Image (tube, rainbow, N blue to C red; front, side, top):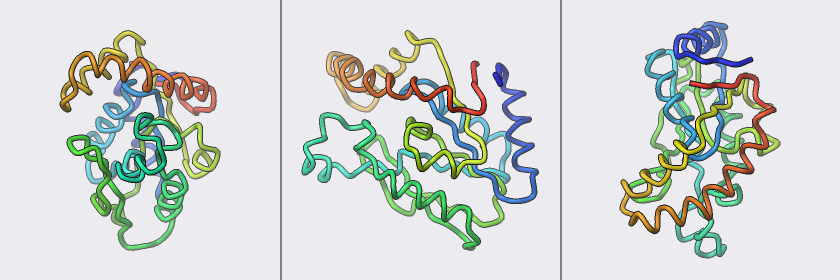
Length: 201
């Protein structure tokens, strides 16, 4: 199935929220592909019916990346705590009164624990990230997963601007995107066929 308008997106998300028991909607896509924008728009449209829990909260901390020798590949699949992310999704399917999730703060490039509260009465949890369809243990924990596609040139320019916005020089930003982010984007693109819905806005 392909969705090409925000109205369709919001209607589908609303239908998930109305199913009567908590649903978890995953939104996947490559770095800079627009998945975060789509996720925020869906949560804003549904108001108190939805809560956003990004995968990025499970970035490994900077000192751990340095210890592992992975700092120059930050954002690659093995620079996240994927098992911790899966455990959180499992908790979100339980009956705890509130589940706290971590949030990644780009301004300091670190995850912050306990930043997002998800009350038990929230019917729809929206989670977004690059690797929802890559890590084998994640897709079975989602009720539905969307994959966001966008123009490749626009996606690369967005990434470069994002790095500049958070303090990198234009030269460094472009080199990082073409070396690291694009390698990750290729991995993610290979998972698109696993999605339940393709989003093309």
